[in-house]
Amino acid sequence: MRSFTVVDLFSGCGMFSLAFKEAGFNVTCAVEIDKSAADTYATNHPNTIILVGDIRTVKRDLFDYFPQGVDVVIGGPPCRSFSPSGLRGSTDSRGQLYKEYIDVVKHMRPKAFVMENVKGLLSMKHLMPGANNEAASRYATNISRYKSLRQSISQKKGRTSYEEVREFESLKTLYPSYKRKLSVLLARVPLLIINEFKKIGYPTTYKVLNAVNFGVPQKRERVFFIGLRDKNAVEANPFPIETHANVKKFQTLDVAMGTTKKKPWVTAREAIGDIADALEDEEFSHVFTKHKKETIEKIKKLQPGKSLYGYGEAWYRIIASEPTPTAKENHSGTFVHFEKHRTVSARELARIQSIPDYYRFCGSKKSVLHQIGDCVPFLLGKAIALAIKKHLQD
Image (cartoon, rainbow, N blue to C red):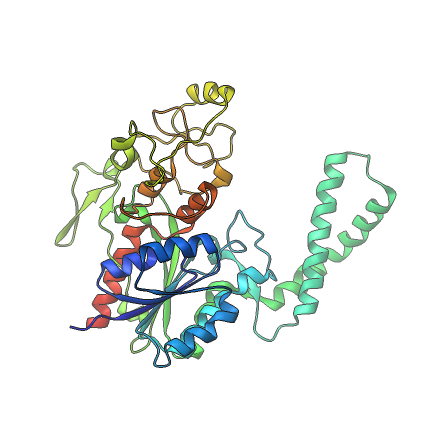
């Protein structure tokens, strides 16, 4: 049986590619703009062509390399403007890169595609095709300015300048009109994506998957769009079946699921407990942050499930008996180890992302943490790859 070919867009450090390779696919090419992430990719995928640069310019090279197309396109367009922690701007160009992904699918005509993004995309709105971008930008700018002035006046409590108050009162009158006019030009991003894929012949469906339900020691929700060229994706239901569950909700460790049984969630201790006392190893990316003495004293008092500075997932002491929250780089303020008085190493964060120990990373420590935090968890990616493979074989 032949191996299905794959192109990985916005590939990052290559974890989605690794997942598809482990599932038996032939990943022929990847596109990545970040040099360090591309170096990591090349180190671990020496037989895959990697195009380093902006997809808007290098996609022509991609089409030249594969004039006959490929079987599957995978990848996750940058998510900053889709994330609740990002700008979420309806006219933010970073949120428009999914259109480049669609253009690649249009030209390469794969049998299937998988597009990944943050869950926040589901509530995001963007300009509808043909909408007046100039007018939308003007409405959005005035709305943003009104909200900024409202917050500023509230905080200054009477110490606001006359000009600011006058501008605020003017925008306050116009705000409902701006909001209404902008809403007419916008549509929910999931519907825009589905409609754009439908136009080029790909029935598409989407689903939020939680990595923890696929053996990843981390609660990480991401939305996946899957389209199938030769069948209706909704009817085909090409998503993987969950293999793990929170056993605390049930009487027994095994949870009945048809003819199979789910396994218990993987805990932080199971994921990284065995290397808690391991010596530092730069090649293994197991290097510890050198904390200041006062920071260490604060960490010693930090209880599991709490954040050192109240930042949520940043400087959060993980609970040994549970999966971790969503793994992120968090400006180098990663998780605090469940029993050591330090933040976790890059390798420990990789373990939390279910990345195999043989995988090697390139770049600065900050870059490596970014690469790990941004990637699709390996075991979740592999479950998706196997589900796609099954549908292609069928």
